[in-house]
Image 1 (cartoon, rainbow, N blue to C red):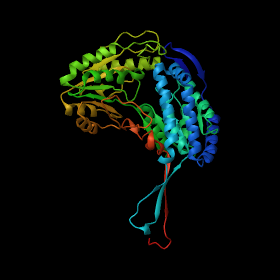
Image 2 (cartoon, rainbow, N blue to C red):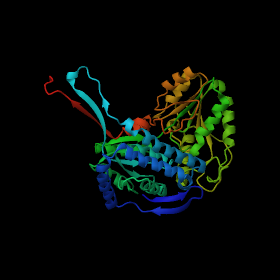
Image 3 (cartoon, rainbow, N blue to C red):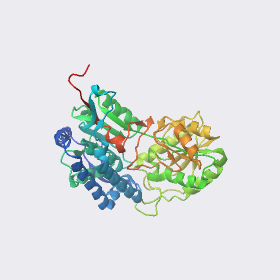
Image 4 (cartoon, one colour):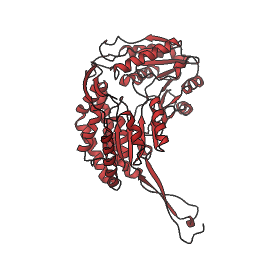
Length: 463
């Protein structure tokens, strides 16, 4: 695996980095375990100091980190800055709440003779974080902030096109005062994943990535009897019911589908619109996409970034061609995009009936699937006709109706009258082929924890 920084706006290779050696991986494991043995007994207050310091550094040096994200994966500079701030907020969340989230729990018992049971939450060891390229900082922080706050150590295997962003975390955590060894970026080669997960000092793996990657990593973890969390793909439904504010829904659909150039697992990939408002919505949506401006992601006037790489653009183009071969209708929408760089022309895809397998695919870029729903029940049916179950949105003026529809959608998350967007104090995760486990808040910090029962029982109590 070649770790290289390639600017997606110019396709220029900026820097390359060699894979880690077996000896470097083994040294990182030994160092992480030794550091963990002390860190596990470090107070929450001391851990919080490190988390707050990391957040302060991100806020202070926001432009530096944001430029790095834009350079390596091409996202809009303003979006990069928002990502850095979100990362700081996650560090701060765990600095403020980790101790409360992991406090011992006194368990109720039927009678005193059963004892005085307490559930304590203890760290387990080293967590391997395997993270993708679409959010260079946020994806990593939502693992290291809770796991370091819980008392674990973390080794990072970041995406191969983000070597400088990955290295920036070594510098960040060292400057924040994290003891040496508790976090390490590794330019790990493919065989190193099994090497790490088979090590008894490693307690599990947190993966964010594709469905295919999840299958491979979950298999390795399962064979090693290691805990795994999987945040995989998504094809989120964006439902517009007949009583929705259509103008606002259309504006949010444009944003929900095209932020980060459409390379978001929870972006609004499938627009499901009630028949009564379909034509009005579609006209407004096309108008909104036409207003997007593709260009230099560092330019404040740019509103549509290139994809993360030329390979990503080529793969998406091939996927669209295969969908057309299956009968999908594809329409070019929006202004022409630059020929230089990894840009992709926004497309609208329809005619995805029950016989077209493309309706079950995830298109990771500015390709919008659109469906006409007969009524509310039909919208729910279309939304649930997916192998994925990550997130979704429902637009309606009726709050009771929105709650009813949201509960009927089989996903891990649903937003009402808003595209789904990650927050530091909200859980994240899905079901079905979108993976398992949860990240952030109390759910995330408890994923790699030993929930130990300690029960003090009178020696003369009956068995």
